[in-house]
Image: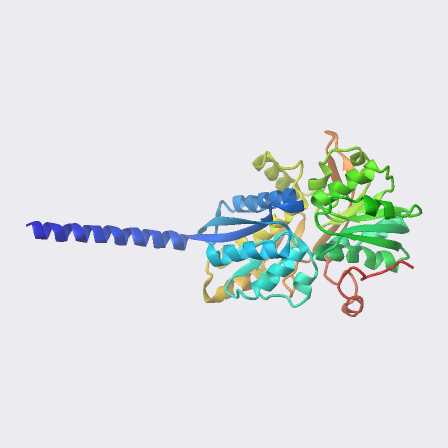
Length: 418
């Protein structure tokens, strides 16, 4: 009897263990880990926090599910440097075993992660908000998708707008890496062609804190400043330019006067009123889709900004695309994720700021909004739409031959000092 009892107990325990193993296996099949990378350290820490909000909102709109699976975000952080972005991505992919990776935030990070993606052909990478041209225009990775348009596309039309305001001679201050190169090219391509002059350029390292030498270089006879800085870099420059008595009007890059910067306190903030900028979204877009997006953001994140930042918006649309693609294939990531990537290539939807779709290089084609900073009745600052320019591709309205002749944006391309 004792022996039979021991056999029965062992059998029961084995059955229980098998049941637990099967339950664990079912859970593994019914859930999916997606890596989520943003800059929660360094000069873009505030934009990085809002990026996470955008991704979280997209997942909330999907009820935490995609392709019939419960989605778990594995969140990792970088500091806007390529090495840290790749290190964090590698951890998520190789240690945490995510099957899809969303991110990064900044331009050179995007180029670095694109290159890392080539070493991981079984993983699909979806951009966060990075906007350097070279990520998708130079030797693109077949498993890297960017549903947002990029930094040069975001500035198309702003050069003509600046000329219309009488800004014929400008001085440039910009961070010295891939995204600002793209932004400056998008602005200067048409600005230079139509007679504008950028008389000199000051390229500064990302994370610059002291702008005294740059401010001392600004010529007296210019009409305006072209400022392509973001995050704490933009705030530091604005504060120090104010303290130095600077009074030239500004034209901003896409993140120079977005919500992550407009909320800084200082006298110079008043002088930002009327500042022209451009980007793939604007605070005052008057459509039901945008109004719902803003309302949902405010209701969900009490610690957020008065309106979603550019980063929240871009992480939202890229995350939504990743989740929509999973729905399209019912969560099937087999065969090297072939069906999933084919679904992503076909993915398009009416985003909060306009249609979202990608081209053959897996890069976004979208609307650019020319904006000016305005003040709301409650005292908050926002970017008011002046003009919308739809369907901007990576050749910036030029023929491919014209664009190829100009080349990718860099410190010296294009140039219109004379």
